[in-house]
Image (cartoon, rainbow, N blue to C red; front, side, top):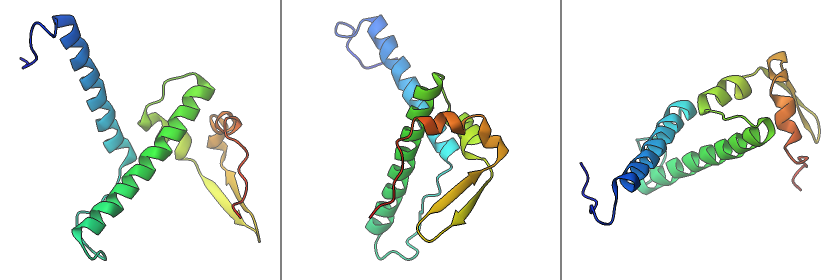
Length: 131
């Protein structure tokens, strides 16, 4: 059942539209479950509801941006489709230790990172310190 006009929207076009919508809804569901965002619904520490909404918006946008960067990088480097859950389990959930030096932070990834991180890092430009 649809309210799209039958003359402007032949059945094939309606089906294609609804398939795209279904794909979009699947991606939104995946984002909600895999990113496991903890957005605030209270105004603890915020002076207004708008402050809470702004804080939530920034958190959501940063998480989505990080996902887009990692997802694109992984697909480009591995030539494989990656779900958020797979990326989270196989790439992000690895043991690591941090070593802090005067002007450098060194990250040592555990052995579980050997499978995907070398491939991932080849696609990243060299990171330099901000001055």
